[in-house]
Length: 248
Image (cartoon, rainbow, N blue to C red):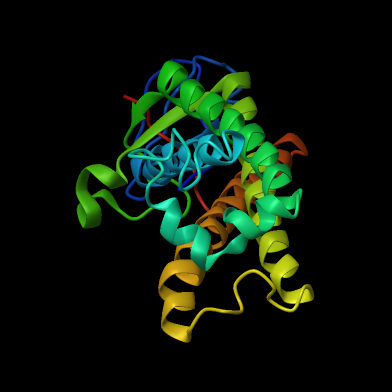
């Protein structure tokens, strides 16, 4: 999904290529390697899908009880929550009538996460350039086509983008795990009434996506940050791999 790509340069400022990777010159006579953030389109597609869903969810929670069944704003925007609120009482009348604060509390964090993710997307599309490099963790373009293509964000904005996205992904995973642990330690008070099929298909799988995919993001963004720190320490490639990048 994301990768660190180092840039090497020579005194003549020419671009050279090897059989394993291509290098992009920066005109620096000292040949100093620089760090770059490289998200692939496959990585970004999750954010493009998930952010609107989270904002939709946020609107439902913030506008309760008007967005709930029987409310003036319920139909047609939040009609699916009539079903989901009967599956997960955190989103239904039981939690609202008992003034359970967990629903609104986790929604408050959703807002912060979404702002982080939107800022990250803005950086990528405002400062990113097409790159022929394969991002860390991203599938090869020959396998998934356009989704495997990448952009590269160099300089300080690349560092900001990577840090912001990593922080947001950690928040997403932590909050979602807390959501599940809240059910476990409450004796499954809000979801224990469901049959197995309903629980798996309409609660575990949908909510599990916000654990699996953000966890993957934490891993690849974390790897990229570690590579940047290794480069700053003077040991850019402790495993002896050639991680150079070519921007178009």
